[in-house]
Length: 90
Image (tube, rainbow, N blue to C red; front, side, top):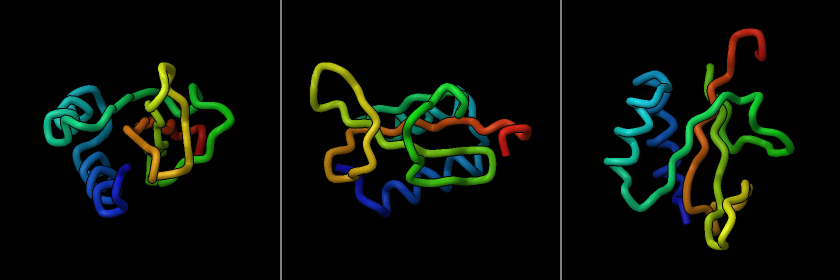
């Protein structure tokens, strides 16, 4: 489960630091119990972001089973995908 306040804090930190591998590593260190992935937003298909920020879309990950999948339910979320949105995607 990912609390709304945790999600908001992570999103704000990613936005203020800028999204890259260094930022994702810092988030992993701060929240070691959560799974973090970083990709380009056009690599994500069929999912609706839970947060849309300037240059970043945030998706929830459900990792309870053997395979990871995207979810919109924070009650079952075990991690986040931080997806970089390129200017031409806006």
